[in-house]
Length: 333
Image 1 (cartoon, one colour):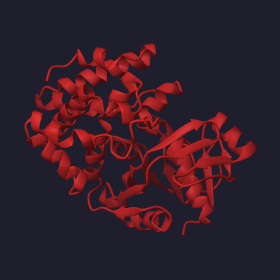
Image 2 (image 1 turned 180 degrees about the vertical axis):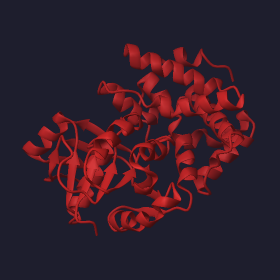
Image 3 (image 1 turned 45 degrees about the vertical axis):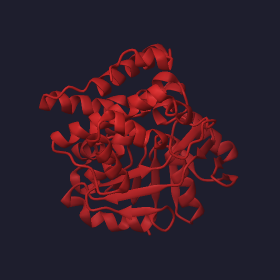
């Protein structure tokens, strides 16, 4: 067990993970923004769990100080490089665990800290950062850990030893494939950000469900043609099937599964919508933008991901949501 763990990025996921580890007896310190840190220091962290809510008293600060054996990097994808520059200034050889959406964070972190320090982790969990000092877990967690580079393989065991006794965690042989699989699910984030609708309502709308399936199909096909495969999970198999069936058949097969376990009256919105509501920056360049960039490189059109990226940029710039009908008029099926 590492002597000291730092969670760098005390938002929804970082705060939840930090709280769970702290309650398991791990020495944890949260690094977060001032409002979140002040609230935790004053009253503790209110964790709204799946079955109960309780307050966790754990250390939190705005700056990276003191020792760290493992740093769980839970900032957004667009903030990875800035965070790694801060980490690089410390006289430390701490293992850095990348826990971002998208597929770039391992490479972005390694460019600054070196390949040997980076261990990848894909987070399959839904959580909400409601207000300073309050986080909510909306689904059960399933974390996937692996070495993105051969140089970092010796560090994986320590990360597994930290996470697996506390959080449901799987060691995977190819973290890149796990990241590409998770990316396909995250391509839908733009729909909720643009419309402002919670996931349970948005993905039950017939037109938005069709747009969601078309977007994932385009993402899977573009990734495969670009040389990036998905993993062997059940979710990946469904994505591959979704991409091979005709759109009309895919819609009939998968439309009822898109919203997952979120009921129609759920108020949960994914991380991109939460960022918009908090006035934070957009991660869409690392989600739909990844498919658009790859499509440009291989000469494949990506109208669905490109359209969502364009409309998502506009919503982040103006703060004005589109109705489902306004959004759908930009696409042809």
